[in-house]
Length: 94
Image (cartoon, rainbow, N blue to C red; front, side):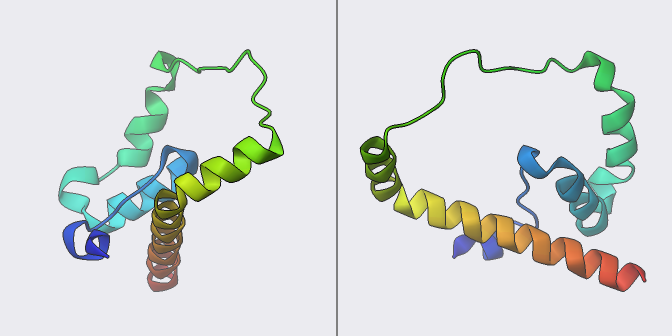
């Protein structure tokens, strides 16, 4: 996939701590102390909450999974790659 060739790191807000740790290790020029900066500014964060039912009928869920199969595969690949990078960072740090 082009993701590996074009991007040093692709993270996720879903995995904020992992993303920040990998960014700090792989791109220190721009992300040194990113975790510290991120967590010192938490009072400025707005947490969004979903106030409606997020349940999907089984047929709708299956339709969406089949319609977005490439996007789901890409997401899972990126998440796996991020965790491999995280493990490599911590393995080298031992």
